Image 1: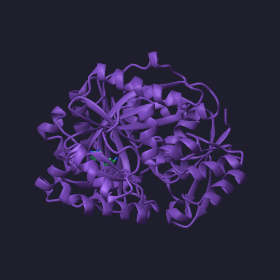
Image 2: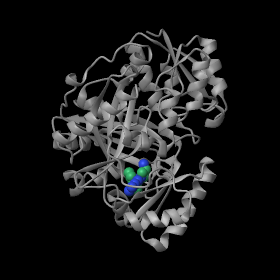
Image 3: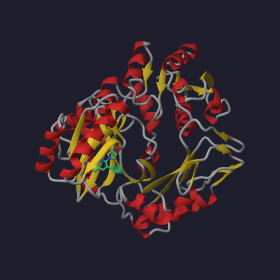
Image 4: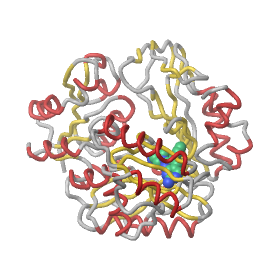
Length: 450
Ligand code: MV4
């Protein structure tokens, strides 16, 4: 096992990794920008290294600075958290070239899943159900139009280097194909330097269901059920839950086994998430994320496992601490993302926190790096905390969420807390009756957003 690891991230996720490491007796090194000298992750880690000026590009994304921080402190492994360098295959390569360990999958796995056409082709060959669409890339407008006619409209054109909603365009009919195709290609080129696109049948009212998988890198893998993350605004999740209210135990077992078998076959290491659209009882693969996700705590809550601990274990060459048979679901968990944003338009709202009080009590977890007097810097994303509740069933989790939101105090900046109070009054939220468009429609109707 490692004696010391470096955490190449900030905020609540850096703190999350410090906590897991400390319970394992592993020393931690925080890195930080000059804007984060007073950050909680720096205070909580055993050591810290300032790696650059405020901008992410010059600090948390600076590969030379992070490698140098490992060399100076003697850290043996790097946990990337989410975002920043977590899905950067080139970074993983540099880490390995310096005889350090990346706590996550191999550069090759990241590369495969980062190219969406290759990811889909790989998953299809591994028996994972995919959205019907083009076989690989579509090079010409003529081919795109032919596919549209064959498949039937609407279709969606996606940039292979995109993902998370970037570089996608819907064509409702043949007349919209030219613009959608050329725009998706141009966006792929300008945003990712890659103009390759592929086409899928557009599913109109699906849920976003993602399966948590975990591999040991030696051909064994498990699944930890699904999360329903359908409530999103502009491809940013705001409310996530596990298990999914629409997914039966039989469906979970079947799609879970398919996913676990697929990642076992490719010797996948560590935590991964296989994203699906779910419509009319069918799962359709869209993307795989090769990182620990923001919403991992809802899975931890219902399975009673520490996913970061497992990541560190397998990265050090140890076995996972569980097998599939050990993994049973206990109750229901919901996470809401507390962002420093001003409604109705979700404008970022950095500033000084004059008072912070975290909720507590049975079944309540608040993952946050906030403290009284902390100043949220304007340079990074607006996530300032995650409130995660766990109950014996969904109604209990919802009641607990309502109660915990009422206890939370974040004074000095606007937050997304009022949104959650309002959502908990909605029948569709209370019954789990929503899809990927529900929230945007609700925001438009109730807040005039959009
Ligand atoms: C789709 C789709 C409908 N049909 N693909 C958006 C993010 C990226 N991960 C994939 N996305 C979508 N792909 C087909 N064939 C609808 C979306 C989509 C979406 C997906 C998940 C969660 C929220 C979403 C909001 C709008 C569109």
